[in-house]
Length: 99
Image 1: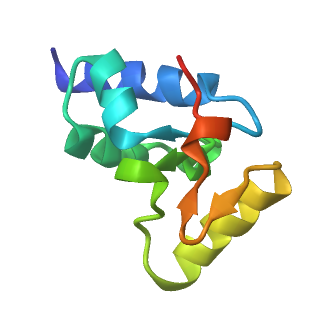
Image 2 (image 1 turned 90 degrees about the vertical axis):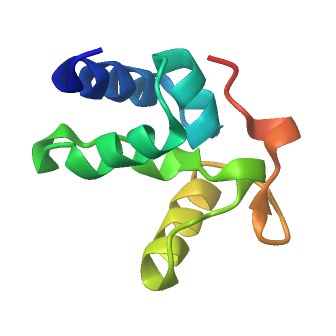
């Protein structure tokens, strides 16, 4: 798959994750036919005006992978949307988007 095509596919899938739901890098990768690292790359490469719901994409097991303030911002955004947490992980049983 060409790089631009992969980016577009990942962005389209991330846009589909609704408020109150989360997905993982691996979940999106499986749907986009790429790797979890490529999903992370696609999120980093999204144009600023695109306004992707990047905060709804988590690491394996529902873990927030971003360090420091960025991780805190991600968690706060998710909590504002009604996503519950069990310790440091989002409750995937209750909030995982099934794509």
